[in-house]
Image (tube, rainbow, N blue to C red; front, side):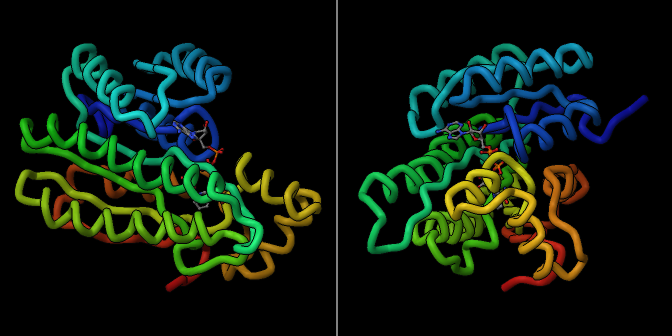
Length: 254
Ligand SMILES: NC(=O)c1ccc[n+]([C@@H]2O[C@H](COP(=O)([O-])OP(=O)(O)OC[C@H]3O[C@@H](n4cnc5c(N)ncnc54)[C@H](O)[C@@H]3O)[C@@H](O)[C@H]2O)c1
């Protein structure tokens, strides 16, 4: 059987759970070799074992996207093991929600660090290999929060920043056969949104219900919804789609 990503190597940051895990699974099911870095050691080893049992070829490493050296080492090992990095997904993310008057320096710096510095570190390192191969797909995970969201001054700023980053890299790297695009998810059921429910003091079920009431398709998002959009950008055939932001939110945004 031939798969859409046969012979490709996909590197996914924060790929051990939630949206990232689903992205990794989608690539592997369609033939890619996959590499995951994550700071959550336990989730990483669980997910890797699960994927290996399915027969997927997986590289895994505990590494922090904020640390350029750790990213560099992991990418070198992936290229030494699998031969290339064809697809990079900047998915690792955290929230430190708070109203502005309560937001700490650490809330701000942590969110900027993981989303912006992390994506910068990974993209700068991956492009070296991609430019050499004259092929690459970089996909950044933004959010509908980029358009503004109460309690998320840090996160909204970072996710909007990622959109500018996406468009700029698309302009710089297009000539090397590398496209750079972003997916901006709406409400997706993951540990991250469970954390939101806990912070505002309601059950996850109630948060889902409240969110769905504002979603035109009448359901909440699942990680697979995002993996599907990521796979579209990652497809070799999407070579004329560059510098775009697709909102995957069950309805129009922006
Ligand atoms: N869940 C949603 O509704 C939603 C909506 C819009 C955007 N997003 C974005 O999608 C991405 C995935 O989110 P999720 O909902 O799956 O969250 P999640 O918390 O389930 O997964 C995030 C993963 O990133 C990892 N990570 C965090 N910091 C890291 C670091 N410094 N280095 C490496 N890995 C790190 C975590 O350990 C975790 O495995 C994030 O960028 C998030 O901002 C999520």
